[in-house]
Length: 343
Ligand code: ADE
Ligand code: ZN
Image (cartoon, rainbow, N blue to C red):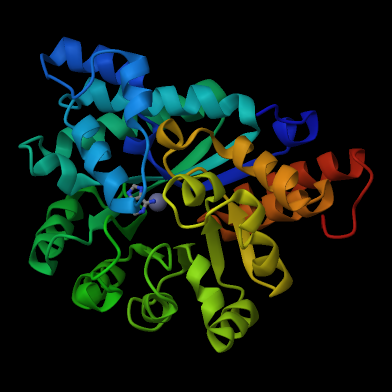
């Protein structure tokens, strides 16, 4: 998918990307080899051929197999650096990265190994590319709440490295309310809170993510549109949504990009952002997601600029950095002929 020059250089933040979902088959095979870990495929072509999913669960089954190659601090650092090397050429100025500690600690990879490895990659991103970042630790919702509480406890000494907590993995049958206590404890400990909701689950899960977990952003949130009262309320409150169109297509959340709900979300006044989710698996990084919405829904450059602005407004940024990024975006937009929203 050719990305337009406008989208390529548009300054933006990515707010929904799982670092384990950026594991390209080339790097996966290399790391698997050096760690002596057998993977379910032996070539890049075989890997890509296996990336045919009909549901979120289908994808997660393969995703967790790939994760098994990651063992050392260096592995996590290499993975993180590779993501930032990729998006440095996509106009990304700031990224908020999810990771799934339980997918690693369950394999006896220490929490410290994961955290220090990713943190080294984040430092590299800042020094090499000037990209700022935040780290968000997700609880796996197919596991029970005591497991999530134990993970939160383990994370407390890393409070200065981890900005927030999230909720991911199999949504259907695992409602937000299952994690009410761990989110309350996380908030108490000062973590920002986000959650995947309304990807495969119903609008009621979006409602509960907001009312029970008190999240500051909704990850995906497509199904919120099924509840007009909820949609109007979230629009009025300016609740950010981290929308991931190529992910939605590849996981069967939508049947075609032409039918993606982004336009309806914008029309409803929701504060949407565009993101890649698991780019190594879904056929594109953040810019391919912007381009897909232009190609399939006719979203114009000015609106994509507004979405990029939303990404900076919805990011967990210090005011000074936010202002710097909004100013850069304003200059970019003015150079492209429109300034109305870019204050
Ligand atoms: N983990 C990685 N990608 C995910 C997604 N799209 N939904 C839920 N959990 C995930
Ligand atoms: Zn996700």
